[in-house]
Image 1 (spheres, rainbow, N blue to C red):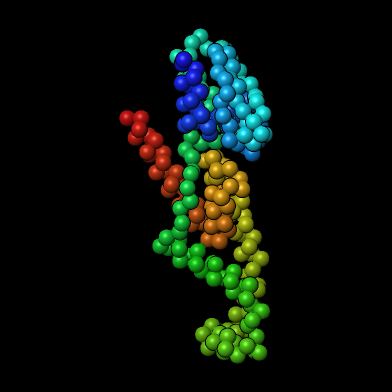
Image 2 (cartoon, helix red, strand yellow):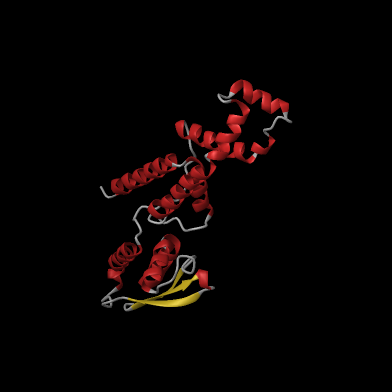
Length: 219
């Protein structure tokens, strides 16, 4: 039967869209709408189970009802577009993390080195002559200058990088379908919190590549 094929197709390839329907038309949160599956489909409605609510079922109506299942693809695509627009979601999804390379890797390493320096600044004192002497010989301002600057810039650095992590979550991860607190979300958040701007460049390149691939498939 046509409805059985559509159900199998949606459950196999379009669970993200099912989650969008639950979030927009049933008012569920992203967590509650997770791991959805389409249970029944008729000309006037579909029943979707929400995995995030232990399989609780929600009815999403077709308004107006379809006249045949031949309309299903067009209607489902249109409903997903409406849901995405309301939820502030793009039609391009980020599904992987891109690690820093080249200049980005250098910046990442430098900032990580700074945080390690702050965490270990207590070891930099005259009673530890190896480190103290090395910094006196190597760092402009000597070991005492090193201690001062590492401590002085800590909160400004933290504030800037936390703000960048918040902004990438709001402006990039949410619109491109990365759910909060998932491993993928944490990978981008932690990377941004350490390196800052480089993570924005990489995720923007990834989105541009995926959009180009999506457009190429239309031709």
